[in-house]
Image (cartoon, protein in one colour):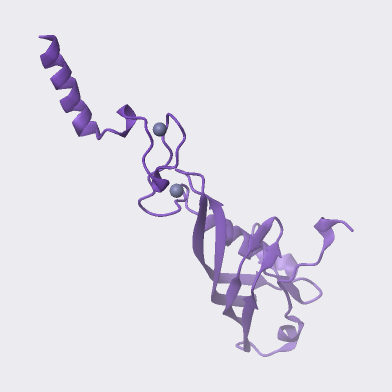
Length: 175
Ligand SMILES: [Zn+2]
Ligand SMILES: [Zn+2]
């Protein structure tokens, strides 16, 4: 079985909205301990959203929460990134009224939140993720993870201000 064709677990049947009066709404609660969205593993994915029938389609608002794991930019250890996913999107209906780049409610009445959740989860990861704010990173000389303690490499561990002092001292010795 090809991985690519497995149905998204974030598909919802909004078919009943199509005949419903404008303003009809329904709230959905998500609580997946873990869910695969394309190449992303979201552990967990939880929260809720409300869908409202509007003249243009179905408007979805809500907030989901997930956690992603990605390597820390400084030390390469696991960085745990908490992400709030704010849903605020219109799914157009009928699909042929959908502007370029917008999401549509399918002819079959289903929406797939997968692509939106995937996009917002990726955008939620900072450019330079850190395992913690004050991560000390790796020693550029020996590669020691400085969060786990100092290494033996002296020079690179010296505070830049002290380095200047050391330079002055060595000049004193020369003169
Ligand atoms: Zn780190
Ligand atoms: Zn070192």
